[in-house]
Length: 148
Ligand SMILES: [Zn+2]
Ligand SMILES: [Zn+2]
Image (cartoon, rainbow, N blue to C red; front, side, top):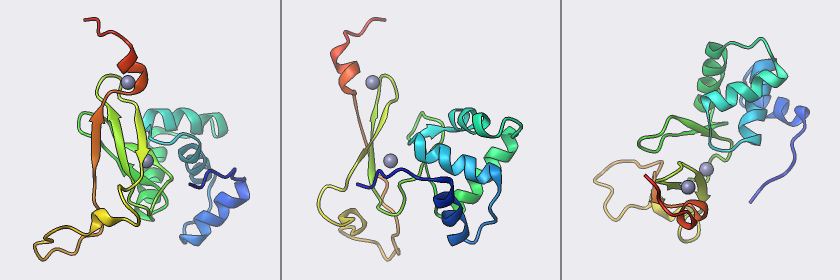
């Protein structure tokens, strides 16, 4: 798994590589998504504002849409959750979600190289993504007695 430190110059290169104009909000959003995997929009806005205090909600939404469309960011939305974003793209990994606190973690494909894209019967569809969500309790919630 790649968990390298990124410099602002790296993010500029990432934007240019996707033929996106380099702007401060785009750099800040890209950096925030890298630093906070599976963050929701509010958390990303909070992180972006530490770098670009004047950025509007709409601007962050627009940047997230552009980055997602360019394939630099992946948008996931487990049922019952708001949209969340991550910078780990292109490997079709899955997610495990805690039913209690909503924590999300990455889960690699069960075997080898994106085998989940090979459906038993593709019904004639050209499949490019398999979205698998495992549900359960995170270790913290599993260790806490449920109080209602
Ligand atoms: Zn939990
Ligand atoms: Zn993920």
